[in-house]
Length: 277
Image 1: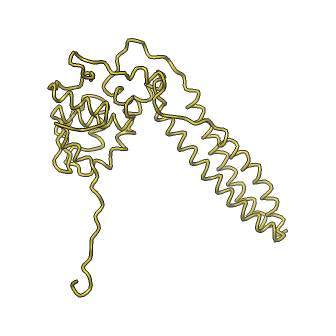
Image 2 (image 1 turned 30 degrees about the vertical axis):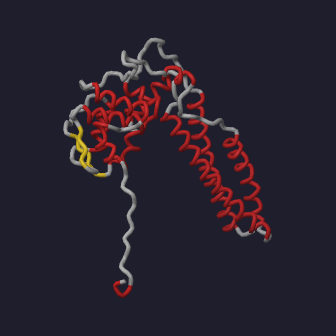
Image 3 (image 1 turned 135 degrees about the vertical axis):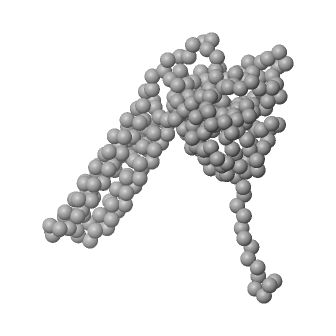
């Protein structure tokens, strides 16, 4: 068989084997970090913070929404039309620091495009990871790392499948080097897909222990309690924030923020018809 052709077949195969192996090792490590994460039960009488309560009811997205809402109710953030402006650049906690970092100090249009970045910021992940360590939720950062590693493993496995198909075509026409390369690719594919198939499903959602602590306390009027915020709020504003934390709904004093966070619908230009019709 021609030496050059053999080098090409086995060179490509070697690269794919290395990529699949590296992706498999990365995925396995990420997978183990999720399913074998140590858990220290939360102290029974330890109260949930504002952001912890928001995370339990809506993950990182709800935490970001709660931080924006609390800042607006505290007079440190304004919304006008589709613009959101931070009027006080001094953060009161780590989540607010990330809000200021992501939005910036000038008027910001298009905050809805930054909500995912806020919901996956370091401070929000830290809240989720701390609660995961207490057995209340799945770790958001570890689950995201496992998802990413799973995707990368799939990409290189399917690239190897494409290589095997091409090798099979050449092998059918009598190319011995392609036949050997195909035979070598089969165990790589089998191992990769076996690892993928028998992986357990990870879940960043609320655990049974988390659901038990989600039951809200009530004040004298029967309203659900909201933990203390960084600002003194009126009873009306507390009730507005309550709906954000428990339901993800912005009403009342937060209606302008609600409008600013809604992405505008796509508009299509309708060009005039021929002849001015």
